[in-house]
Length: 406
Image (cartoon, rainbow, N blue to C red):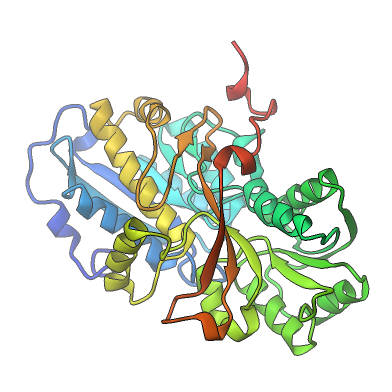
């Protein structure tokens, strides 16, 4: 699919963003172009898709549609979760469209493909949905930020919380590709480091369909925790099919999704999702600032934002602020400025961007409410703890040359 402007999609013409303005010489091509590359129609479209573009638009609007006197334009396209399509779109955007930054990437393989091209073209990537550790280890780039979270942080929060309750034995149901393997590996390392034991693993095709055999095998293992190392509709279908067999409905065995979005809970319903623990980087009803952003998002999309969509807002907003502060949109200068900034907005709290591209910040340990506890639509979580970034994010890896000590 060729890239296209999406002003009509967002309910506002991009022409409103490109009114004649005298752009500063410091802005290349006289315009700052932001690209959103994600899944618009497939398995991950619910928690990224058009909502991510709407979130970026909110950030652009908050900046007044301009930076350094130059207009800001937004473009979006569907990478269909395929690295070759993502790479081709990125080349087209960088070479012909003069796009300065691309964000989102719900599939890690697409993110890693575009990161390399962006580095060659001196452009910025901001991974608001891709969470594979490779982006901050052996595949790290000086022009990339993994803006929301990674598999280790997601796994560490949930695993440590459940281990503290005495749930020491684990079984993994894992999506059989890079993301799933990374999520499983990171969670398993935390489990074993904290004195737990992994009893087994079942790996399912991506995307999956029938999860009954995998979930029954997990149940038969006797593991106290059935950990789902997958995402999107795979997670939803696994939980639904587990509920049909009564799996995870006793104190002896619980289901723990290692990556679950609020849109997944909405699809499942509280009756099926209740009591599950998960770690998230953002919850719309956390405080007044998060609620203020969420209401703007709701006005556009008639639903509350997922953490990934919220991350696009934060990434876009801080990217534009960094251009303003740096006095240029040159990629290296913008990334240097981002690394010098304290990131604190409606989405990210107490954040700082490391040399390897990891954005370290506070996370939330959440528990899904029972239907009787929910007071309104989208009122889905109890916040059980605020997890400090330094406690849940991984230490800088020697595999990333950007972490080399001077």
